[in-house]
Image 1 (spheres, rainbow, N blue to C red):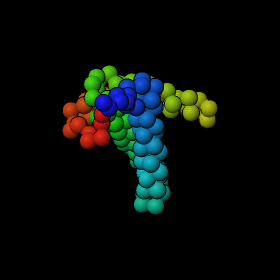
Image 2: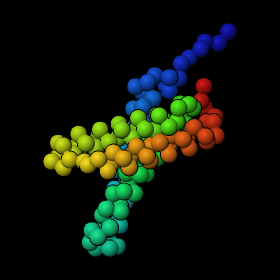
Image 3: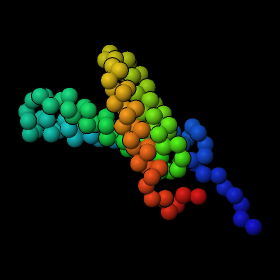
Image 4: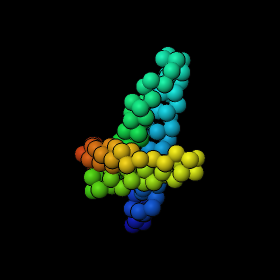
Length: 130
């Protein structure tokens, strides 16, 4: 008889910590790419607001998608939770460095996380999921 082993995705803390960490990594990677693009190609920061929106959207969608794909239920709610967690991390980090995040970033991350969560739940089931 086989042992029943619980998955990482059944634990609430870890099932949100992994996608939020991936979302933060995606935001940082996009920020670096867009900074290099702005510095070397454009030479000024005239598209900084657009690059910020794109970076936050990519991080929110990736976080919600990973959470929805591996948890396989409640994609909308889990995506919203991931977006709020991303905003909380950005808010605390900004508060430490003196730049407080506004409410528009919260709304953007919540909507992006919800879209990612819905698309993750509706995507194909992962092969290695128990």
